[in-house]
Image 1 (cartoon, helix red, strand yellow):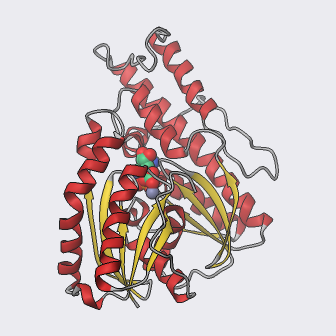
Image 2: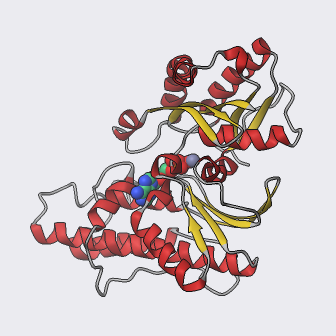
Length: 351
Ligand code: KG4
Ligand code: ZN
């Protein structure tokens, strides 16, 4: 089946054409990251406007790259949520317009299920049941995938998402946005030594996450080494690392903090994911979403996996971050099961 996927839940406008849920014929992504970087995070209204400007061209390129005509499409999958409402509506509007014009079925796809299904675009040896860990800017969720249609949420973050923690800590360290890849670069080859940040909710059988305490511990450490106290009168104004010229030793301290922070996040994600795999008796673990691009996390998971005889599998870095091929792949499973939506579905900020 030839499926068109559309993704506009956050700051990437994306369209892709995928055959049978596995063969990517085109995969177009236009990122707004440069614009949002100026503001230190995604500005929802700007995101919606930029999706509106980009969506037609992105769709046209997806068809051109795949050398497919719109009439050849057999179904349309579009991200329905979770995400920014205004941003989602741009993709949903485009998808519905095409579904009406082409008289094809449409499916509203859960963005997080999309992340889980990115793996099937690259591997044909991942079978159900398995555990899936989605670690992105907005979510940190553990799923038990009993089958393609039986996806059960078994753990989630109680406060910040792992990617959000990376972004907030990077901001705090004066490293810019988005934080994940910058922190990874800063931490590269750095030994955190004795600096150990707290790991929350680590008791046995607890599959939930919490990263806000870790973020606060980083803040305390920054205050300690810079001697700068946060200003309570202006929320979010505490950026000691950009307020002055950094000495070599402070620069080094910052890298040590980045390494210790990354290690703490990777530790928690690894322990919880394998805890879930053992609890549900599976030997496969899908790790996906933007944070799964992190090399230190991948290494830790692989080491733990070989120790326990459970294989962690990761989509390639390009398919870890937001894209439309994963949405098309997920939609293909839904269509194949005879499922589709009628045209009056709306966007969902949470799901
Ligand atoms: O899945 P994604 O592209 O968008 C959402 O659905 O949220 O994930 C974006 C998140 C951001 O928080 C970003 O900082 C994080 O993924 N990220 C990383 C890395 N690359 C992106 N986090 C850690 N290490 C990375 N290399
Ligand atoms: Zn995502």
